[in-house]
Amino acid sequence: LAKTTQPISMDSYEGQEVNITCSHNNIATNDYITWYQQFPSQGPRFIIQGYKTKVTNEVASLFIPADRKSSTLSLPRVSLSDTAVYYCLVGDRGSTLGRLYFGRGTQLTVWP
Amino acid sequence: EAGVTQFPSHSVIEKGQTVTLRCDPISGHDNLYWYRRVMGKEIKFLLHFVKESKQDESGMPNNRFLAERTGGTYSTLKVQPAELEDSGVYFCASSLEPTGGEQYFGPGTRLTVT
View: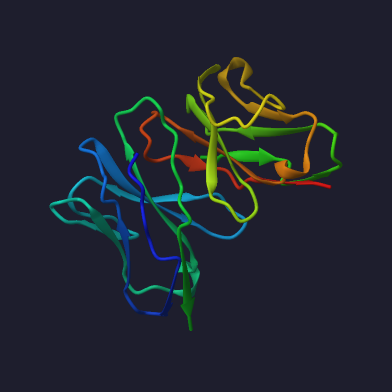
């Protein structure tokens, strides 16, 4: 199981771009990288998933270098409502064992 | 489309009592998961249902925890008898496929055992 390492906390101001990097040195060939967001008193919410290179959706972008040993979640022009905990997860999407492994996550605080 | 719902949102019970948590997954989702976060710790997997069958229950902490999913719809998680260390937030999630990717989480049930 590939362990993930990400910063415990980050601070930003409204309107800035935020990049959260996650290290997963032992990522396996079949593993995908998934990011979840969690607001206080809510369950985690899927943001984005990727295998390699770059993935973009309406919420964020995910950058994965060729060696896949790390990934970067990019949030463009954050607002106060983006204050949340962000989790980086690595797992085999093809597995029938659907369990997710959550680490400590990164507490992002956006200031006005 | 309704999301995953959980009931109750908060439960306070005394040590030794029994509590039953309920989860209603998104309609049509065969895969249902239970997770929990104990104070100060990470969110941990408890078990995974595929329809009414337990696909993986390796995360269940002990035999005081009993999960059921009769008829493959809603699920219950019973803790009997509850201990102080069972306090935490219990999350339920569901998904169409067991992809290990996108799961839809409910808001959680905060359980406090005094």
